[in-house]
Image (cartoon, rainbow, N blue to C red):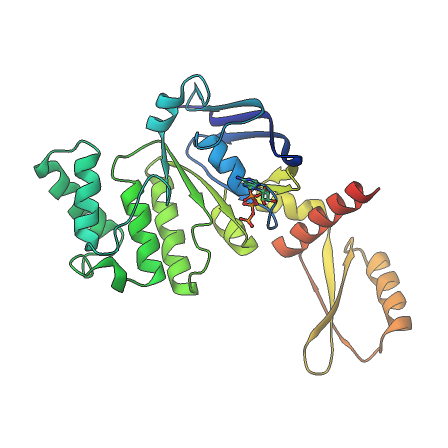
Length: 295
Ligand SMILES: Nc1ncnc2c1ncn2[C@@H]1O[C@H](COP(=O)(O)OP(=O)(O)OP(=O)(O)O)[C@@H](O)[C@H]1O
């Protein structure tokens, strides 16, 4: 499908009196990795649950691969894979048995199931552990098996809700590689994350949400440029970062900022000037949103 494989317009959801999604608009181009970034409780999981037909919206519309999540629910379900929700990993079975079982439940023949299971075990680097029971798997192995199960039947859109939360750096990087490979195969990956670095590394487009509203959308580069030129960092003699200040990056502005700083902190502190990171973007965007909601 060309164009946008996911289109969300004016989406609203309340739980009791609490407004969780407050008019969300999103457009996800086909074949991209799209990251939804937001602090705890921002509404990320609720949005994924609505897009994957698990929770009904109050207002607004969502189309996945051209199908409406309310009126074409079955076609939407056939267009998506959702990790950790539709797929139930049985701890007592081996990785191979789990995969074969899901293949059979998905309607593949015994022969097709065997072929698909071997393919998925190889692709997700689980061949060596294939005959071990899942209860002996590490967090990273379980997460890989979970994604493998959700990909038994190849669907155009994959939803991953915080795929790398709780994983160590090596497992996280292994999953990033898998996500990149899925994108190369033309699958659109929509993921939520709390890790700014993850969004920065993986995503073609990032949407930041806070308190149920979109506060910014763009590439990592575009979002960073919205925060402005450069960041001045001040370090003490133990090399601890003690303060950051944003600057346009011009000589005039840097001189003015350093003069102001020198009047309130020791002029002996070490200075570093760098481009803004995703952390700066996130803090700036969500802090602005906080100020707006207070005013
Ligand atoms: N079924 C529900 N009933 C009542 N309140 C809910 C329900 N699901 C979510 N909420 C509330 O909606 C808000 C948003 O939750 P949601 O899980 O969507 O946020 P999130 O951005 O995914 O957060 P986290 O990063 O912590 O997972 C939270 O305040 C949560 O308590």
